[in-house]
Length: 375
Image 1 (tube, helix red, strand yellow):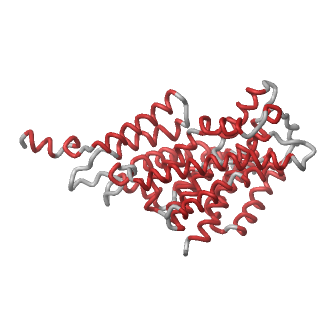
Image 2 (tube, rainbow, N blue to C red):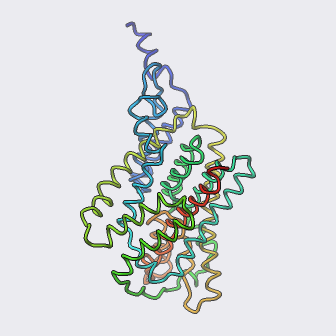
Image 3 (spheres, rainbow, N blue to C red):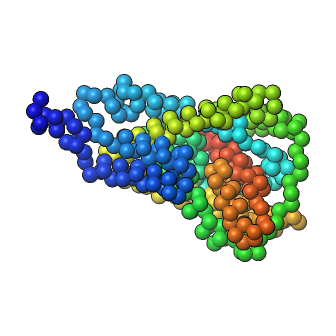
């Protein structure tokens, strides 16, 4: 083999400038994860996956996630078939404490209100010419829940899975950047300094009954949410029953870590520039950003509306935690509250709308899947 043949069979010969752009994006993701601590458990696997996915494949060698029979294509099946998201939900359920939500049920409404971003973006996507199925998959980005976005897009619009997944996880990672300006814009200093009453003690019986009853109600309302919420509440039952600690530990530690690695890397590797960098992808990113902003606004403004009728006022900052970026949105709410008043601890209260948002986004996905699956 001469030097020219060697060069022609290397990645250098097939590298295009758009591949270099995507590799730079992967490096930026890793940089943000390492230096800014923006969701490193997500951005590092996704970022390195983007780099791997943009090495030009050699003809006749099955290397990319789209090449039939390649190793990466088998890893990507877990994304395409919607296998990874329910396993992520199992782990989330096993690490989630619903006590604050149960002690103050009205905060559930904030998680529901934040889903307005999903449905307004769905309508906007329809207006811009996307099919109903594509619009439904794009709209769910507003829930700020990567696994839910991947699951719904794999069912409704698999051709858009790459940009939707990257958009959803990008905005999840940028919660500390995107949400605070919106929270300051729609609240006053006095409102941001509202203290919440300590949550009541929730009994063990309530904690065990809740995942069973909540699943039955949610699944009957929106059967399409059964896969995600079934795993979420099953994981929570493993935790709260106190007799399956080994299983709960496995779900919230080893299992969720393994699936996060495979999911993040596979999603990143699917962003081959030739199929990813399109005007449609850019539009999806813009719609996803709008959806996330509207969801945050919806939660904050609904909290202010509730305060018109409540004797014990809610800190409107809690509304921003209604998006289901767990636990980052709750942490951002807590940080903003502390900045206004160092004695105002909102983290536990913010977890109530935050976990309600997880349930809400899964129900929204179930409704969209039920309505659009056979459209």
